[in-house]
Length: 135
Ligand SMILES: [Zn+2]
Ligand SMILES: [Zn+2]
Image (cartoon, rainbow, N blue to C red; front, side, top):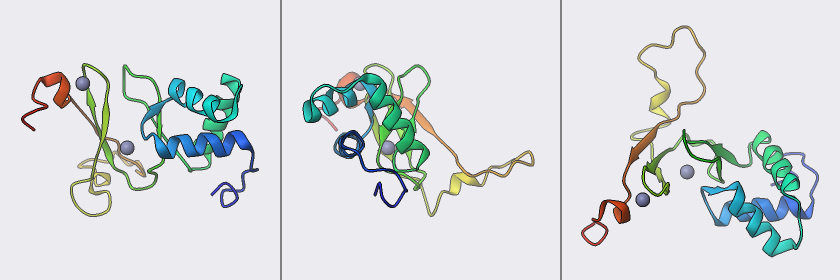
């Protein structure tokens, strides 16, 4: 994957990419922990740099719900959405309702050429709403 994106292959890049694949929607802090478990001492800055490079190359997607820290996931290019718990911040994927990214058909585009739509559904996760056992 790194080679396909013309990125030099380094151990931190491989470790960060693997961590994002195994832990969708992980925040930077937990990714640093995961990479350190794998490689030993790695600077925070190195992990930030790798995440930026992978995001710029389109290998991972950064999502940044308002009021939350940035999170990363490996599902790129399918324009799926997210549901975020207001209480604990847990995040889950929500598929687009029908077809390829219908949300790109904005009711009013104001003359913009639109290439991405991001919808965040806010609410309470099953644990936080106390309905976990009923779901
Ligand atoms: Zn919750
Ligand atoms: Zn997602």
